[in-house]
Amino acid sequence: MAQAANTLAGFIKTEVASELSRQMISEEKTVNGKTTGTTETVLKNQITSKVNVDLVALEYADPYYNKSDKSWYACAYIEKAKAYEALKPELENEKSAFYGIYDKAIAEKEPFAKIRLLNSSRKQSGQFKTKLAYAELFAPDLVAADFGADKKAASEISAQISEIIIKTPIYVTVKNDTDDAVKSALVSVLTSNGYTVSDALEKSACPLSASINYNESTQDDGTGNTIYINTPSLSVNLSDAGSKKAVYSFTVQGKSARSYNRATVKNIASKSISAAVKDEFAKDFSNFMGIESASADILSLFGL
Image (cartoon, rainbow, N blue to C red; front, side):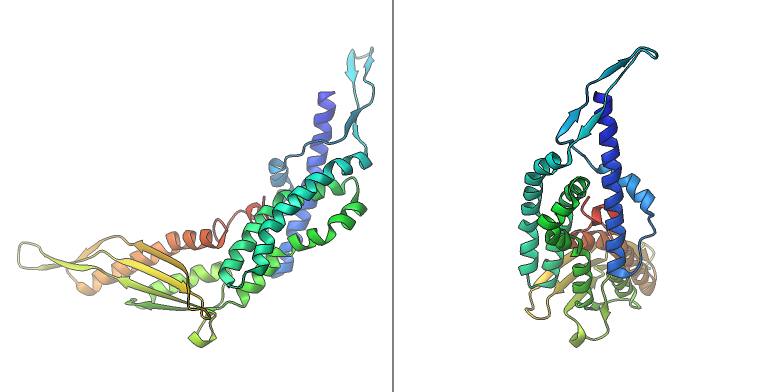
């Protein structure tokens, strides 16, 4: 009987994973017209390993013993009507948890705060989507009637985030930059996260201002020659163009550089800061916006 229940659970997990992977690919195509390249089969296998399914309304036929092969056999099954009634309270709980964050996101005006809340609600929706896919195995019409609007709201979050990002161009300025190396690194991180970088302040919704401090010092090498030492640091501030309020800040220190040539040491320090931007700033900004990284696991992007 336990083996029969495990087999049934495995079948249900596969069916739920198949439906979720189909939804994920559909959401991706809605946002940018393409997918990450992850196939539905790969997604289904990944989701199956993450999804937990507690069997509801489980029943068994009478087990019987087959004398010819000296084995017991049992059939586990679920009555559809009973299953939906058992799952409905769980769906209501997951729905409430989802809207607890989603409603705040919809009410929020500041774009970056709105995106962060939408990302949180997208992650919160993961278990809700899983329960919906599970319930749809038994009563698709009832699920559509009772939770169709909620499922639609959860499935449109990615598109909402994309729309806000498109409408939130960022203008980047960097003080004390060498050959715009640090600015180029900042722009690269922003565009990899889907943001548009504006070429004029008046066209931007959020100005990002950064400043490099090379913390230059000198040292005599003992023979009368001067060694230039830079211990660079970078501060980044992002503000809302409308309210002028700061919405994000970041600081990082680059590796110390030494050279007899002042221009050379400054160039080395600038490259060090650029590398820190591509690594540490990229992680920090993505975490701030509510995703693990610009290339985050697709499952986390869809709340699983």
